[in-house]
Picture 1 (tube, rainbow over the protein chains, first blue to last red):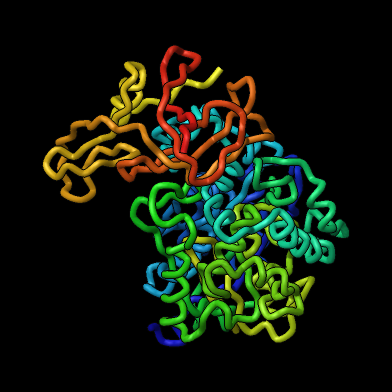
Picture 2 (tube, rainbow over the protein chains, first blue to last red):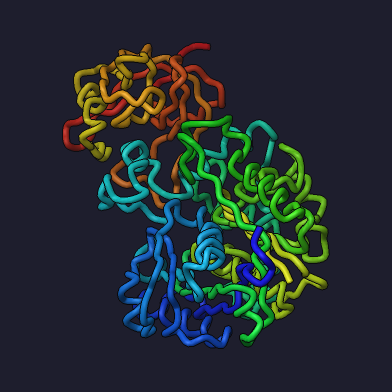
Length: 385
Length: 129
C-alpha cells in the first residue's frame, strides 16, 4: 500500500454534451472533454505526461497531444474488451501515478457512435484479425451480429435458471430512466418511463431484450485527470482518492460473447474483483454509498449485482424488486441515469458521475456519499473522500 | 443469403471440413485435448502440433435468441441462434433449423447449411428427446 501522500486521486473530470449528432469530429470531442477536465482540475493540458483509452477509440494519442499541446508523454496504453474494461482505465491510471512514472495522467474516450457509425448494428466489414473481433467469426454467419444478440445469448442460461421475466428486467430500466429524468445532462432528461412503456417497447432480441433493455447509442466525449495526493491538494477540486482498483480477465472467457467457459450463471471475474477490493481497501462494494454499475443491457445489472456480491446468486431480481436500487435505497444505482438514461460513452460517464457524487456536486446527489463503487464487469474501483 | 464464414489461417480447417460435410474440432496431437474456437497453440501443453477429431454432432441447447432489430444481415429472415454444448464438452454458436423456438436443454444434432459464396457452416436440428 502506498503512503497517503502518494495515493492516486481523481482531480479533474470533463465531458461534452451527450447527443445523437455532435456535428464535430471524434478528435474534437476528445479534445474538448480533456480541456474541460484540465480546467476542472486547474492543471495545464501541456503538463499531461501519460494517457490511456480503449483499443476501440479512433483518436490517436499523437492527435490528442497535437490539440492539447502536451509536451511529453512518458507512458501510454490501450485497453481491450470495450466498455467492460472502462473501469480498468482507473487501474492503469492508479499504477501510472503511484509508481511515479507519471504526474498528470489522462483517461479519455470520445465517440460519434450514433451519428458516424451505429455501434449497436452489424459491422460486417471488420477485419477478422482486428483487435477484439476474432469472436465475430463464430457468430456472424449464424446471424448473431449485434451486441444485443451476443448479450442475450450469453445471459439466457442465467435468466432461465432463475426465472427472470421481462418485467424483472423492465424494473431496472425504469430505475435508470427515473434518475435520468432529473439529471439535466442526460439525454432522457424529464422523460421517465413506466413498466408498461418497457413492456410495450419492441423486441430487439427475442426472447430477452426489448428496446428499453438497451443502453443508448450516443455521441460525446469524457476525460478524467489523475495525479498523486501530494500534488492534488493544491488543485481546484477536492481530490477524490482511488482507494482501490482491480481488474480480472480469465482464461477462455470473452466479454459480451462469453460463451466458452464457466457456468454461464456467475460472473467469476466480478467476484474476484470484489474480493480483491475488499482485501485491499477494507471496504466491500456493497458497503459503499453509491453504485455505478455498467449498464449496456438490463441483465448485466443482475449478474453484476451478484458478481460484486451485493446479493446472493439468483437473488438479484428480488433485490431490484425490493427497491434497493432507488436513490434512497441501500444501493443507490447510477444517479446520473446510467448508460441507458444519461448517455453511452462506453461506460466513462459513469466514472465521472461517481466522482461528482463523492465531491457532492451531482444533479441527483446522494446524501453523505463518502465512497462510490464504479464497476464494469471485469473491473471495479472504490473511490472516496 | 447466409454470409460466408470469415476464414483465418488458424481456423480455415474447420470451415473447409464443413464444405465436405465433416464436423471437426481441433485436437492437440501430444495431449489429445480438443479446443474450440481453434487456436494456434494448445493452452495446456503449448504444443503447436495440431490435428483434428471428428465430432459426434450430438449437442444440447444451452441458450437461444433471435436477432429481431436489426434483422440478421444476409438472411431472408432472422434465424434462431443457439448456443450448444457438444457431447465432447465444447461449446459453439450455431443455428436451429426451422423457426420454432426451442427449450433450453433440448437435444440436437448437426447438419450443414450453405452460405452465399458456396461455403458451409454447421447448424443443428432437433432430435426426439
